[in-house]
Every structure is written in C-alpha cells, then in structure tokens.
Amino acid sequence: MSPGISDRPDQLRQVVKAAREAGATGVWTNLLFLRPGTREHFLEHLAEDWPELVPRYRELYRNRAYLPAEATTPVRRRVSALARELGVADRRVQPAEPEQEPEQLALAV
Image 1 (tube, rainbow, N blue to C red):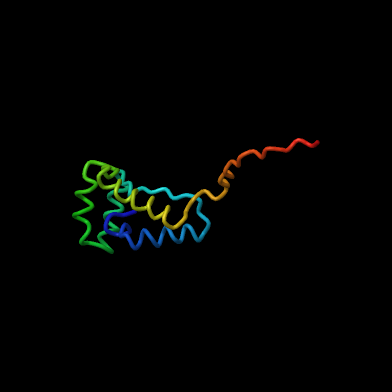
Image 2 (cartoon, one colour):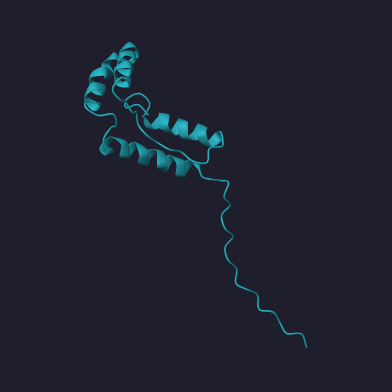
C-alpha cells in the first residue's frame, strides 16, 4: 500500500474482495518499503503522477525505509477486519466437527 495513493478504505475493500473472489486463503498487508536508491527512483516517478505527494513522502521516508508502526498498524487492522468481514480464510482446512456425546448402547437381553 502506498500512503495517500492506494490505502483509502474503499480501495482496500476492493482489493480484499477481489482477493477473496480469486480464491485467496489469506491476506498479508504491508506499506511501501523504500530503501535508498529505490526511494529516489520512486520519488522521481511519484512527481510525474502525484507531485503534490512528494513532500509528504520525503517526510514520511526521511532516514528510514519502513514507515513506523503508528502508520502501518491502522492499515493492517483495517485489512484484517475486511478479510474477516469478507470471508477470506484458509478454506483448505475444514473446521473440526463438534464432538458429539457418545451414545449409550443398550444391553441385548
């Protein structure tokens, strides 16, 4: 996910829903990772399509490749909630049948 580009709630819902419809059995979430070198390349291309976001990204990723937990945790929680709501689950594992009380057999006389 890219802050301000692909992390809006409606976008996240669409992605999780599309994953479910495609048969996904899980959803993993992370936000953009920008190492030095990649950061400069990304910012150059960001300036072409969303120049108004360049200052924000420079600040967000200043001296770091990953965003801090306070930025990533809300998005991860939102995606996890959507996965639960939309039924993205490991459907390869069948839930265990509830245990039934053993039946008391009658003695034959």
